Every structure is written in structure tokens, then in C-alpha cells.
Image (tube, rainbow, N blue to C red; front, side):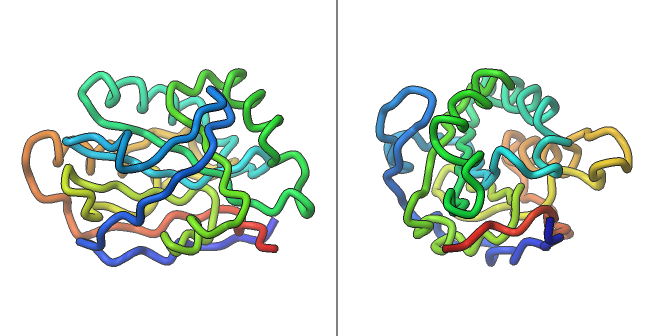
Length: 183
């Protein structure tokens, strides 16, 4: 495991569009077709990362709460499966079902989407407003494996601000986790 901090996309940046296969439904998902008019959360994750394992249950809980309020969640794995076979699509589908993902879990085989977002670690969070402009990028919360129970406080605070029609604080901390496994 190589600890990596997120690159922190510039606030206000437009979300790069993408079309990727969903490993849960088997359908193709396009950002422009599934985005929310309120907010869209794009998360780069993978199956093997202990930082993702640490937050998975709480992430599903938070996604369920905010999806009920009109916010779209989308997870993407961009890892090279030659390096990390357990991050491949058939395993992604199994993990998504086991964890109870209620959001698409997309596979970025070419890694072009991760590059477009400048994602570098798992998990790496990006929150876009209804105009698909970056309002938040950073960590889920301050915890990590072996150091506290996940709360999702940082992500939740950003989503609450957007729901209230307020600006998200610019005091945002980078996410940290395993590096994306590049080809």
C-alpha cells in the first residue's frame, strides 16, 4: 500500500463527462444522463484498498441518506487489473452487492476518466453542484484505518451546504488512501 493524498481539483472546475460500464446493472452510464440537479458525488474507489474498506459501510449509509434528498452518487474504479486482479469488474459487482451499494460502480478500464478528474488515490471524493461545477473535493472525514470510526463528516457537511443553497466551505482537506494502480 502506498499512501497517497488527493490532488484537489480546482473548485469551480466543470466535471468531465464520461461513459462507463456499470458492473452492478450491466448498463452503460453517462454522467450527463445520471447527474443530479442538486449535487453529484463522484468517488474513485477500489476493492482492495484498506482505506475504502474502512469507510465502506458508512459510505453506503451516507449515500442512502443523501440519495433520498436528490443527490446522485457514482463510484468508479480505475485500477489496472493486471496489477490488482481483485479490482476487476466481476469482483466489483460482488463487492457492490455484498456492501449494499445503492449507486453505480463503474469500471474505467482505460483510466482516462481518473486522469480527466486528476484522481490519484482511493478513496478520492469529488462533489459537483447542479451545474456540474466542483464544490468539494477532499476527504470523507478525518479517520483512517485503525484510527477512529468513520463519520463521513466532511462529505456530509459539503452536501448539507449544497442542499441548503449555501457555499461549501473552502477549508477542504485532501483525501488519502492507496494510490491508483496505473498501467
